[in-house]
Amino acid sequence: MKINNLELEPARRLRIGIVPTRQGDSDRVRRDEGKNLVLCPLPYDASFMEAFYRGWGIVQQFIAADAQLPREVALP
Image (cartoon, rainbow, N blue to C red):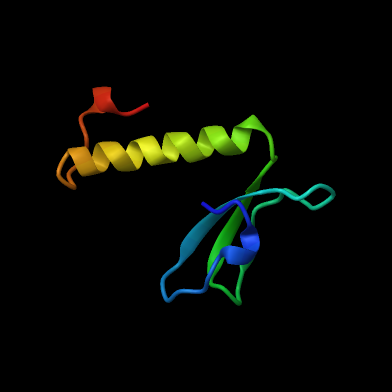
């Protein structure tokens, strides 16, 4: 996740970029062949921050579970 989609960088494996939609731009999911990633724009309002914090919460639970699948009760 990046606040600025210009900060997304290319990499070897397929990745997903979750970025806020700029006003007037399309919010359709698309593949950026040059950076080898799937762009998933979200409207820039509370939905972006909600997705960011939920995603970070899942990462924290994964780390707390010693890189194993967290217990179901620990996930949103």
